[in-house]
Image 1 (cartoon, rainbow, N blue to C red):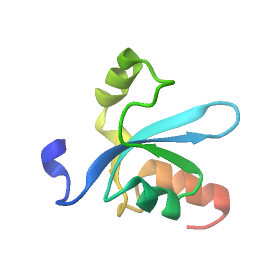
Image 2: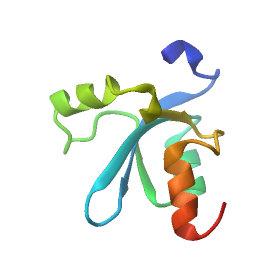
Image 3: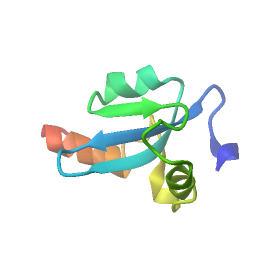
Length: 89
């Protein structure tokens, strides 16, 4: 997957805490700030956050390709869900 990343982008672990649980994904972006500017509902981590065990982080990394997206991909499932929750497309 790393070879598919656009030049100048890094991979961030993002989380959306929706109150009764959370949704995790990886997003390629220039910065964490770029992600939260566009989607302020998310928290972005460039490194494994301390509240995630190394084993859980590895599980997330080895997840199927649906867990990986790009900040420019408006069709990425997490971004679509966030916009739907906002009432925007």
